[in-house]
Length: 126
Ligand SMILES: CC(C)(COP(=O)(O)OP(=O)(O)OC[C@H]1O[C@@H](n2cnc3c(N)ncnc32)[C@H](O)[C@@H]1OP(=O)(O)O)[C@@H](O)C(=O)NCCC(=O)NCCS
Image 1 (cartoon, rainbow, N blue to C red):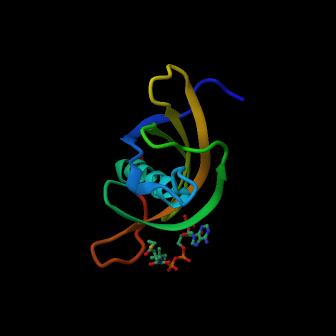
Image 2 (image 1 turned 90 degrees about the horizontal axis):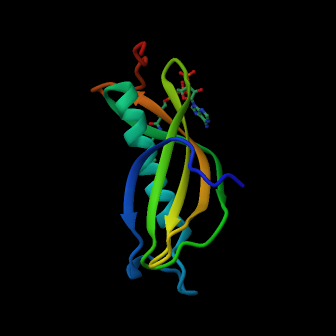
């Protein structure tokens, strides 16, 4: 497995005790929502307007996230369609008091550009 994250660091946050599952690790839905937020930041930067998540095309949980981990989400735009934009992302953590980064997830989320009326809108050329 690659030792280096691919993509641009888009968000960085700390996993808190309130985000745990009954086993004491971080709830997968919390990690997924951080990825969704990061992907939307990447999509908005490219689209220069509102976006909505339309699909999660791929999502893999590779290693657990623990309380106190610093979660970093890296994004790259994989494809720009007429109104949709596909963002490939991966999340890595730095465990508390440990120097190495660990890859915990990867995914591919699709966003649709929206106009002010809330309907899909054509994405302008870069
Ligand atoms: C996003 C939304 C406005 C799209 O409207 P629509 O008229 O149904 O759009 P279309 O079916 O024509 O698809 C628009 C684009 O999204 C893509 N798309 C739609 N559904 C998709 C899916 N399940 N997987 C991959 N791509 C999809 C289409 O291929 C198209 O891409 P393109 O224009 O680049 O070719 C509408 O589906 C919506 O409001 N969804 C809810 C979004 C939301 O609330 N998200 C938050 C989740 S809580």
